[in-house]
Image (cartoon, rainbow, N blue to C red; front, side, top):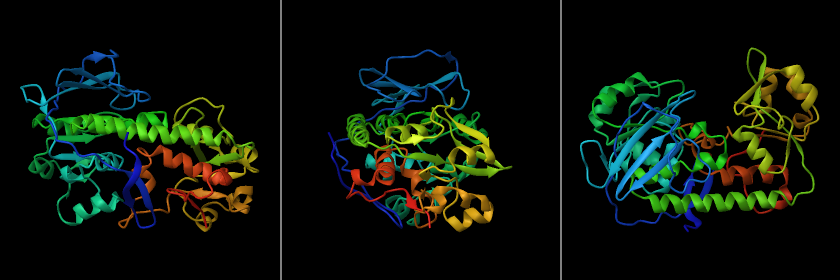
Length: 383
């Protein structure tokens, strides 16, 4: 197993303890046996424990990656074939040139030691990692527009071996053009997973692309081990503080995590009492301010208050926020204030692949005596 030790992920305000990457000789493999047609046909997975959105089949050196849900509401299975020896319907691995399109992809690629393979990225200002930022500033990673409106001319000129993207409600038109140019587009559905460890397990997809499956397995196993240790530690706490989350985002509607969401899972695993933990749904709840205030006025902690990063900013938006006990007692914690040098929020980039650190943050906030020497990675007390 790879130990969680000596690679450091730095941002403007944070230095993160990550994983040693084991470097072994690279092989070759990957395909684009794209999309559509197979409806809800599940296949045997390759040592998957939590992720529900993909499967990997093995046939000798050949690998078949199946994305079971490329976007919300999708019922089609996208299939991609990979091999160390390229063929008419297979993609050769390891991938040498890749264009990821979400900041959540960056840490997974970095943990595998493959950041040098990134040749393009949309909205490069959102990247927080200093390692990848240096490549951007050196001109080795090109700006390819914005997600949803990619510059296909620049992207095609980069000649990537693969584009790893995501879709919200359906395939993006610019990426359909890329596919027609015989560049495989792989839709990463990590954001659709409903468990923190399920999201992190998508590193195994990048392990497949770079022919580093063993390394990806070891990295994930180390993350899982740390996460489960933190859960056990949290369960030793004898008090379960009440927690509020979210804020009013628009039209006087308060958005907060539903009881079956991955955020609610973090709060459950940290042995807190999330006030909406019994609600149904895996996304967000849309509630009135009055109903939230009635239920959460006396909450012990307020974790992740929407996009707000300062208490003054909150009361400027709505002076009634100051009536919550968590506001009065300085117990509001936000992940939005820890940013990279160009303004990207660290949480939005790294948290997907490091749920163990998110969980430890919440434990440190709500049960500080359990982790006396731990320093918060993503969250900060709101000032």
